[in-house]
Image (cartoon, rainbow, N blue to C red; front, side, top):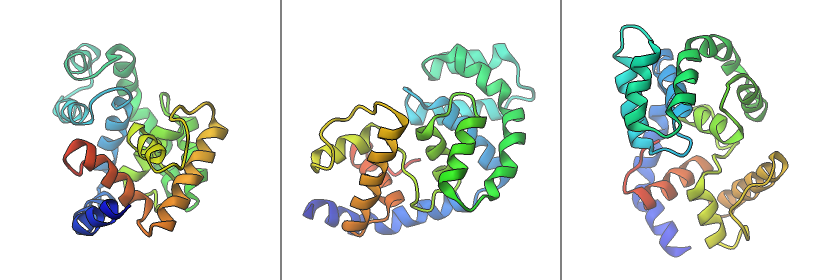
Length: 199
């Protein structure tokens, strides 16, 4: 715990700055975060962002071109290519919802509307556009592993939506107990494993 607090003290300004960047994204940048979160399941975050940058340069979303980019950058590229092609319509559906101040309700709405999103990816998307406000959690492997290391949970497999919400509550309570905001703790744990504060 001491090393975690010390590392947080060192990184606090960078973490806070990164989260402020998320909050100041334009609508176009938010859309790119939607594309990013459609690609990240079981794939490298950095490579997924590279794919988003390449896709964003296309003058027109064409299946073969998107597929070619994804085949070199992500797993499950056929399924993900379909979701990327649907993304403009998906964005039209979800962008009006983003005004909802209830973060958990908003996450549920996003999860229902976006093909390929569950609670985790909906949380990821909302955090990456600055709308999580430490009210929801992205229960990715790095968070589950660290919760286990800190004896907050005994296993790292999520069995159901109910189980997700239970672990999320434990994580949010833990972040309050150690006085590190949940969004910052997530990025801190991720950076410890990956060597950078990313997204």
